[in-house]
Image (cartoon, rainbow over all chains, first blue to last red; front, side, top):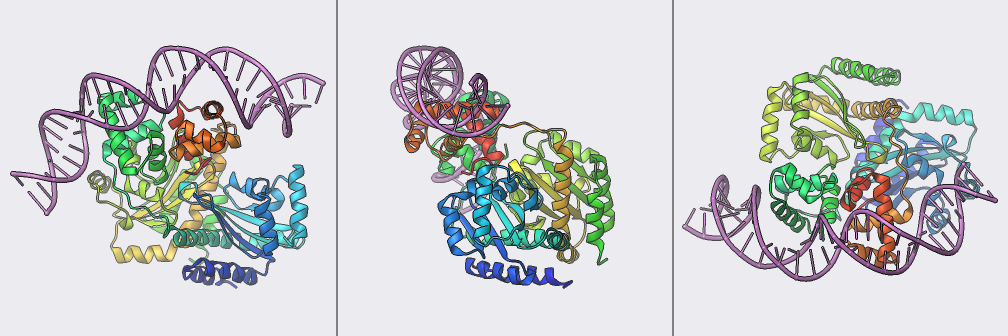
Length: 237
Length: 237
DNA sequence: TTTCTATTCCCCCGATTTGGCGGGGGTCGG
DNA sequence: CCGACCCCCGCCAAATCGGGGGAATAGAAA
């Protein structure tokens, strides 16, 4: 029991495919003896990916109804940092209560703990465990395993990112210092004239940098170039 | 030694002020017997905050030169998720090598490990330990304490957010779905006309969304609005 | 109920930005 | 030595952007 977390991390490190990730969450469910374990990532392309132990019918219904937009777990975690007990969430909205009723009906436990995880470029994921039991039993479970769950969610997300990154990696030419300066200042809200003044160059020279940066990044216009440079961490606004 | 992490977490929970946070990183430095410990939050809405053990002169110089924009540690961590050993970073740029020389001169250790941490609204922070020692010694240290450092960085950032939330709470009104759509498409490189066509609304309606989004975000122009929305995780390009 | 917001549409206008065409000078590696 | 890249500058026409007027519907909040 004491070395449980080491085993989990070790097993996590060996995951190589999304299929193995799916089997891992099932294994975690059995290991921690809870009803369900869910890893749910929202990547930048907008295509969500999930590895979970819910009934497929519930998952389909959830996606079909676009419940991600009203689910209090998703909404609540999106603006929080620390793991969230489902009881702390705001279930007051009518749509939220209707959703909860449906969820319980679909076999989702009445108790839950969700860990928000964030990666580069606004990547956002949730690691959730949920179970049907009393408040005191659940409190005992969460206090005992909170640190484990934080670490697991971290490694889980790292693996998921690693697996998915292989496909959409784009090789790009580095931007020159002046090009980075130009995009940074524009991203900070300056006009070209202001940025040129700040950099002590002519407004037209600045344009040359913007154009070459746009070309290197394959951007359609200035806004696109700034967005792309930010998205791959080249500039920080 | 085995219960070290429990002690750390317990002590972290008691932190209430930024001053205590500062003393905590000093305590961590002594506990783990490393040269320096740095917690460095980059708060987009306001000014950055740091609790660290570097010499004040180096910190001042760093801020004055705006080294955050060329520091390979910051740039590298910004696009990564897992803790990063400084040796894995890209030190090839001339500015990076010059920066490194200055840093070593200022007493920064030659070995380092930085943990990127992300919170809601694009909040980004770094938890770093660094030390002067050989590669093998450093490898032994990092493998032994990696999980500790991940957990510490998590709790540290949670506390920092908790403490700062009171003071610099910027009331940002949420963007409407259409405003988010508009900014997203513009960030993807479309012109207003193209984005309007995609959303099946008039080009002028789109302009209304852009303007209201610009107003809500306090942005000077469209590019700025897209950059701000991206920076605080509201849109993903 | 009334106010607020979100969503959609229309007009006009000028300033800014854009994209394309030129031209110089420097440094660096093959 | 030459190509490649980075750094600087100018002119021009057209497209885009930002701002000024409006106004209607629906739904949610107060």
